[in-house]
Amino acid sequence: MASVTISASYGARGEQIAKAVAARLGLTFLDRAIPLEVARQLQLSQESAESIDERAPTRGERFVTALAAAGSVSTAPGVSQLPIQDPDVFRAATEGILTSVADTTGAVILGRAAMVVLGGRDDVLCVRLDGPVDARVAQAVADGADAATARDAQRDVDGARNQYANFFYRQRQDDPRLYHLIIDSTALPVESCVDLIVRAAEALIGSRAASTTPPAVWDDR
Image (cartoon, rainbow, N blue to C red; front, top):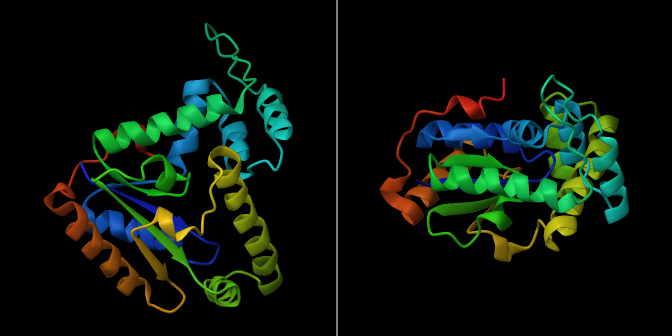
């Protein structure tokens, strides 16, 4: 089954575009559901998994500390606590989810360094949404963000995503070698970006981008 990975800089309208692509291709959209499933597998609280996932570390020791301190592991009756001492446990769980989805139902996957994990497969299209910093900040403001907040968020969000890719994979998110298609989504309307991605997916993986019913396990509500 076909999949599309989408890596997006802050303000590049990644979620809006990814959801529209998923709808057009009849595929499940995956983003927040991934850390929630990791939390379930590793018996972490939802809050711990999302925190770990969204704020990638700058140093390995910090991540190990964050994982261990997320001692917010489940304490439900009959479920033993699971101390996590190695960030590779978190990485492996995330990779397992991405690979399982790509091997079965397919999906449009936003973030999670999926372009690295699934890159090279003939049934996966890897896309990057980007644009000049000022244009992305302006786009975020146009979408309702406060100007000062958007500027700070751009630094924080882009920095965290780059750290995630570098920490786990020694990769840069803006490396063009990781993508089949790179789009300046500040220069093109959302619908045009969606059209380009859908056409590229159909050209690369053809009829395998068929409609499928999203499995309940990936429901992030």
